[in-house]
Image (tube, rainbow, N blue to C red; front, side):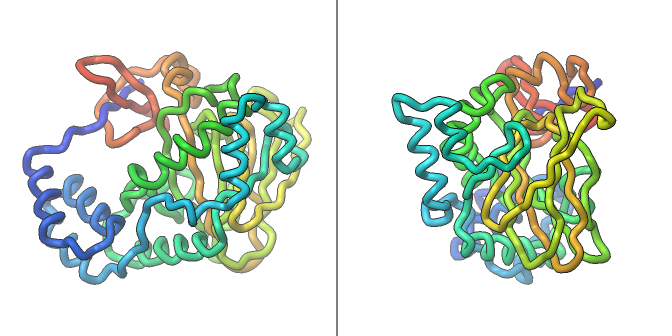
Length: 314
């Protein structure tokens, strides 16, 4: 197996980043991040990317402003910081969906979900180079390509999701989540309609329904991945726009087909290097490392500085 380390910015790439910041001060942080990340990954496309910038609509700010978040989420986080906070007390504040240790919680305001989907559609329609979320979802967007990691997903994970996971999932890395992979998946007629039974490359997963209008497409949860499906009774769970489902990454689950419309989901795979450095959750072997971008798959290796890596199978 191979391990991956994040690439350092080249001197040329760093120069391009500073130059763009000086030349394009009126553009939003999100669209600027798209340009900078694309140019530094594909230096030969600099001219094309700059041309693309002119045709890509302005995007909203990617910062996790308080106004984006559901008031109930902030109340849950406040409870987690109280002196008597415990797993049982927190679970009583969350909606019971019928599947073991799967919790529904309000995450965003609906108006923010609408704005985010609008941004995602703009990016999808642009000619900017795009990766795809994973091998199972063929339609969707990696949020780090829009510059959402540093100013949006990381603060969301650290300040809002980590306190919840610490109480709810202390046995599977919930107290030491230190990286993530965030992406949006899209379900639509004549595209991906559903998602087969699987587990995630994560210690803890948040799955938020962003919209738009759709029918059916509920999620279903079985047992942990060590349990055979023949011995499992699945529970169907409704997915509601602006609300999220929080669950263990190794909890087997899937998505039933939508019957009409279009559905966007925000997925955050949260990872704990303390857990996965011991054993890769995807192949059950100890990983070895090679160079990779960003958080990679959440593995870390101590060399001259702490670096991130990924299993070759993910």
